[in-house]
Each structure stands twice: as C-alpha cells, then as structure tokens.
Image (tube, rainbow, N blue to C red; front, side, top):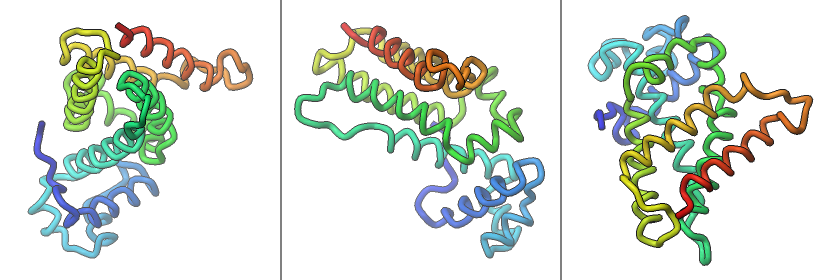
Length: 199
C-alpha cells in the first residue's frame, strides 16, 4: 500500500482544512494557498509534506474513505458469523459512502477525480479496502461462514461490486417507486453479497 503522508494526527488539521475548502468550492477551485490559510500554516509547510494539491486531496480521500469503511463494519457479537458482519458492513458502507459530504461533492462537482480509480489503477484507498476485505474473508474461511476461495480474487470481486453500487446507484434508482428506490437496490446488493459469500 502506498504510504499516506498524513500518518498520525500531526497533519489532520491540514486534511481538515482541505476538506473544508473542497466542501466549500470543490477541488478545482481549491488552492494550496486557501488550504494553508485555513490550516494556519505556510504554503511552504504544505509543499514539504505534499508536492501538489492533487496529492493532498488524495490523502484526504484515503483518510475519509477508510474512516467510512471501518465505521461501517459491525463489531463481532455472540452468534454473529463473519459473513453476516461482512454483508452488513458492506451494505452499510455503500450507504455511508453515498451520504458522505466529501464523496457527494466530488461526484457532483469534480467526478473526473474518480476516473483513474475506476478505469486505470487502484489507489491507496482501494488497496486499504482490499486489505480489510481480505482480512474479513480469511476470518470467514476460518469460521466456515464464507465460501472457500482465492482471498485476493474474492476481495477484488467484492470491491468491484460495492464500488459499482457506490458510484452508479443513483443512475439506476427511481426514488418515487419503492420497488426501484435506493433501499430496494441496497436489498439487492445484500442478496448478491449473501449469495456470493455463502458456502
């Protein structure tokens, strides 16, 4: 996984500042000067840590997306197998991503930022999400609740599935029709995941 330049909380105030700027005006209209001013640091301090705004926004997205994913994973409970936790977490994660203000702003104002990660290559966020999925799959294989298989391939297939629902769901929904609204499609996602993971 690519190292994230915001290791530790030292740079969280800078990432918070860039988040505030992006939420206010979008990525294209945000400048390093705006971020530095909002964070209360010099532009040179930013340049020492991040070579450009795109890298800084990339680190912000990684922080935010990993936070969404880890918060969506249910805690282990008595009588709850790994497959159930994974399915619940993935469905909740898709819902949380779609509602996240930064994600919504980027999709609405700067969607081209996401294209490289959909069409060309995996980013740090995707690598971290794959690691989380692989850990869950290994646990599911161990407790027998997840269909045996190649862990990395299964993790990638799961990420492709939930990434598609996260990015494209609004193109398929009709919120006026309860059979075609977001909740109905999240139910379909749950069914897909259950059937994919069940031994």
